[in-house]
Length: 273
Image 1 (cartoon, rainbow, N blue to C red):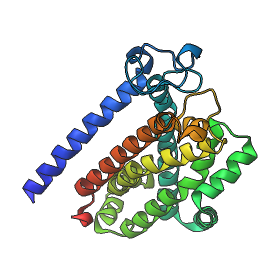
Image 2: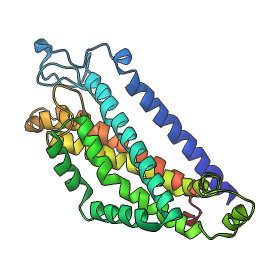
Image 3: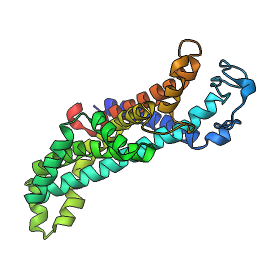
Image 4: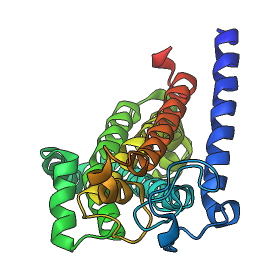
């Protein structure tokens, strides 16, 4: 068991280091790449990968490496912000509903059931279209579709622990609801919530890219991976690097976050071992 945990911790450390390097590279995109991701250069239109342009150029002569790095700022950080919003909102709602119960619990859980009755991406498509599109509206729509899973998870765990011996002991010691929730119940929720959030980053990233691909997320000429794939989809057979560059970035990043989530699950969730 100790050897297994040591291997998991080592794998987690490596994945965290790679993730931090990726985030740093994306955050410092304009410092790393000498080309402006939005600057047109009609003398370098649709150049294949190589030389000064390692990933090639697009139909406007824009360097794809610069655009992939700049697009990561939107794709990755929007997904991280989205997961942060849904995690905090859903966990807080589930924790309070599970502890206090009553009419608020019933109303919020019925609202969660209503949101879960629709496929998340379909609900997000409808909400984003109704709000008028754009990255902010896409994040907001996906947050509305994504919070119920965290609320359900937190509420289920809270109901299971509400009458546990350590909670009864905290009550007899004079602990109030705020103290019990923050010091005793919330720490017991962090493991499964963090695992779910880490696995959700890749999913949210793909859904944001899907909305942008359909024209409802980031709008051209802004660099965003889904939007870049949509812009170059007609050239997939003749100039495949225009689509493969952002597509490969999505594949690598989503795979990295999924591996990170799986490793966190191995470390934090005893039931998975």
